[in-house]
Image 1 (spheres, rainbow, N blue to C red):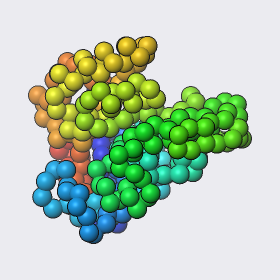
Image 2: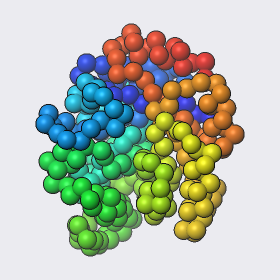
Image 3: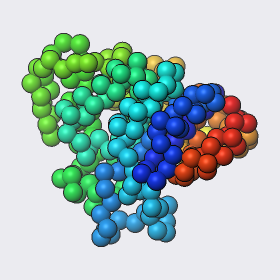
Image 4: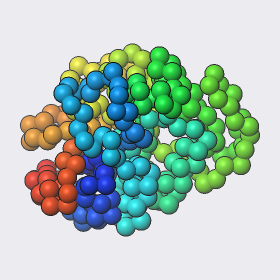
Length: 275
């Protein structure tokens, strides 16, 4: 089982370059980073975990800039977003960013797709909260049209693109795509339509939810051998990782603290026992 990591990289944490080098040298499989463009100070949306919103949420580095730095100083480390708020992006620009990062990294990029929790952040991007999932689906379809091998038009409910020359192309026609979110029919429908698998945050309840996802996957005509479930932001223990292995999980993403270099390196030392 591969051990990857995730961290809120900010202007106050270890740098992307230093962390990426340490991860590759120590034998970790990958680095995933989250995204928040901004956090409105006045909001009615509560922090999903309860209590005050942690400081790092309003200080995150742009994930594509951070991962490009990580790509430049590594050769085998997988790179991903956990997650990209697709509805908050212009899909033509985002398709170019994704394809470019995948190209310069030699096909190492994974696109984590998410729908967000912060209504005020989304509203500032012009996103109607009730239709954000449908908007994300539409934008994923538009991006796939731009990644197609031949100029391909797309006209959807929220956007369109003419047949276009759009290079570079992601390796294999599209990056690996994993969708984050809580288990449910709507989420599983998204996964089966355009993704390679699921990023369940925390990894709880997989004994019950993975069979439901597999059933939806097979009902959609997808090859059951290709489904990937990647528990995300996990606080590891030997028992928890053994349970994931029994379920057929092949990659786990471990949560790192949003700390300075000494704090993060201590966490990597602790996690080395699971490699």
